[in-house]
Amino acid sequence: MVATSTLDMHIETDAPLPTWFGIGGVADRLARPRSLGEVVRCVQSEPDLRVLGDGANLLVDDDGIGELVLALTDAAMTSYTINGATGAVTAMAGANLPRLINETVRTGLAGLEGLAGIPATVGGAVVMNAGGAFGQIADAVARVRGVDRAGNVVTLERREIDFGYRRSGLNDLVITSVELALVPDDREKIRARQKDVMAYKKRSQPMAEPSAGCVFKNPTLAGAIDRIGDAGARVSAGMLIDLAGCKGLRTRGGEGGGAEVSPVHGNFIVTHPGALAREVIDLMGEVKRRVFDRFGVELEPEVVVWRRSS
Ligand code: EPU
Figure 1 (cartoon, rainbow, N blue to C red):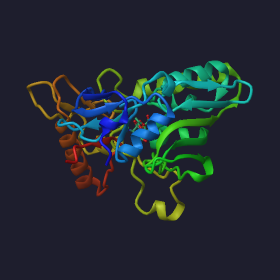
Figure 2: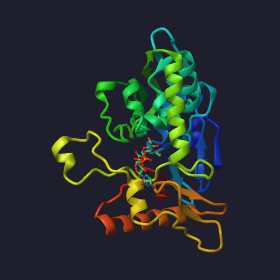
Figure 3: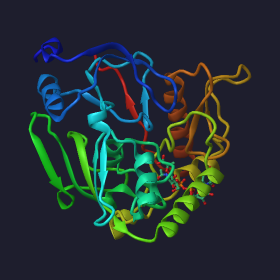
Figure 4: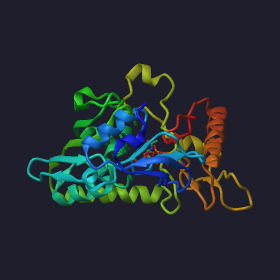
């Protein structure tokens, strides 16, 4: 492996990894590429690098991460263009999704407003196929461009991408830009829909404390997947966690601090000042155990956990 010192790029050491949990370890080395060419060079020198998005769905273990981390924060990696007449949007992978949603709604383009309130970069949202009851980003994707682990620049059409519930099959691609196909429509209608989605979230989810949104994927109903395919026959993990009596479960009893299963929505773990990533991981394990004991359902994490591998 070529040492990163030959990359001819600025490498930050012991770099904080900002995540929405507000806790967790640092990156030994972090690079902020300023072009597609620099992304290619990074991948060629270190194929197993990791890409940091908005940190909205990420938990970094307390002892941090040894692989090179790419943060797509440079202006060249966060820009986007919107064609209001055709609905074609091209966004660099580091573009901020909520900002892009606001801008497309203002322009009178429908297709992203159902994702209102989801914090993410565009690249992160595509890798996870971010979404909820009001839509998923896959439905707006026309094509994705990125760098594969061999360092080749590739462009994938929507039909070539294996999107599914909270998945894209693109985890091995360093996404650099995404083309979206949105639909010109009445601006006030789209804005009203965006407001409804936000209002629903404010009612049903904890917004004040740090969290990474839903911790577990919604599980399929036993057997249903074989009969009807992955067509949304899922039950709310939050509801199962709630029914298993986990709401309010906390890693530090009377002392304050720690990680807590949100009393508002069972599928959110919120962190209090001083919480450790280890506590969130332990609490996830405890929730998983209790739901399995009660319902025989194996919950699968939606939150991505980065652990030091060496
Ligand atoms: N419910 C409970 N107790 C709870 C949570 C939910 O009884 O603690 C019940 C609700 O009352 C409702 C049902 O479960 O009847 C469904 O709840 P909700 O509408 O909150 O939806 P969800 O399936 O729990 C999904 C997404 C969320 C997304 C919402 C709304 C997943 C894993 N979760 O939650 O996404 O915000 O729909 O669109 O797909 C995320 O991905 O980070 C996330 C939060």
